[in-house]
Length: 315
Image (cartoon, rainbow, N blue to C red):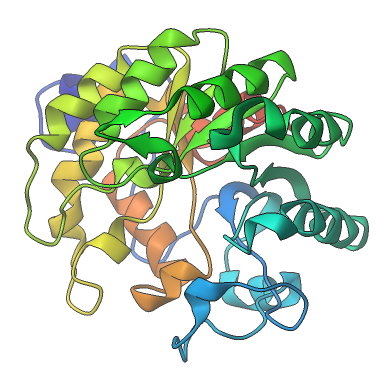
């Protein structure tokens, strides 16, 4: 769905929702999808098991966050599939993190995919680790922040080689970008059209200051590449965490749907990092408000179907 149709089904345009296909879904406060959803960006960690330096000093986050805590936090929303995304433990512990989450998945069937960490910037040196990931059916891809592979304003040959190796091993690439790094991600995705790329947190625009540009045009250029999808997460965190409203986020939501449509946009929470700015139910409520009036088929794509396709989660 593109912008004109999206604004129409959201009650902001002139087209009928039936043009988007299917019957429109009416929005009511504190209603939830009538089906179990897929969350494509969840972290688990236990600081007593692995070392997460970035948690130091955070009274909120520097404690265990495990599947049972997620279950409690998501109520009354029903989540039946989770994609775990690496939680930035020490790089030398990346394989141990994958082994630990693989063990969690044996106890919790909701964990259907793992996005691991790997030092892509090391190029061929990272090959054995990536090959080991490819042998684990739960590992779907790798996230390595672009900042680890940037020198003099460009991606290093080692990082580029690391992404090439992802493709050779059948792994996707979660794009962890900082502000202003979307053009680098666009060049990378253009160079490797056979690699599936997932943009994390809609590219972290400056929502706090309501700055749509240059993010708006950068996102449009990235979305023009068919091998890129976008995760709808992290927005409350980069807004004003204590004072954001859904109206603050709406122009950014609208542009994501204009660029990627429901077919290439994935619901994601970024739990538990999101807790600095929102609860899980409030985030789901906000997304539902944003897509008020969309068809049931589009709602299922956003919350379930697109994730299954792009993360290869199976039935």
